[in-house]
Image (cartoon, rainbow, N blue to C red):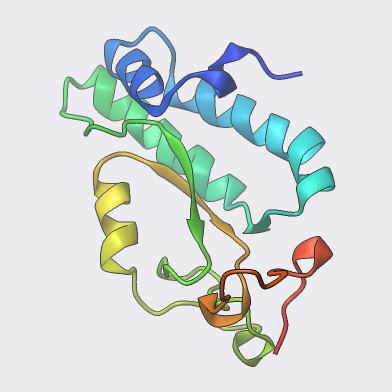
Length: 147
């Protein structure tokens, strides 16, 4: 079971990483473990976890901290982006079978801003092309693509 690192607020994680109290890699590894072992099997919230990329990003953040560089306000904070916010080279389906197998050719402005702020990201499933009206049932169980 993951430690209390996964229960800290974004502000607490970033402050702990910036101060060197914990490493970004420690945070990412513990949050990935919790997600992969406990959360994801029950909830099916992620399309792609970007686990390898998350660890690489976290290691880069830790190297920058040791070098005394500015880390950004979200330093080492793991976040999930909905599947309509593209990250270059990563799957981006917008919850639709039409885009199954598509890899983003660019990083969206919103995603780039959180990355620039030091966040570590993964991609969550969402309703078909993000279109759900109030009262609709939403995403099918298991996070499968529709369309």
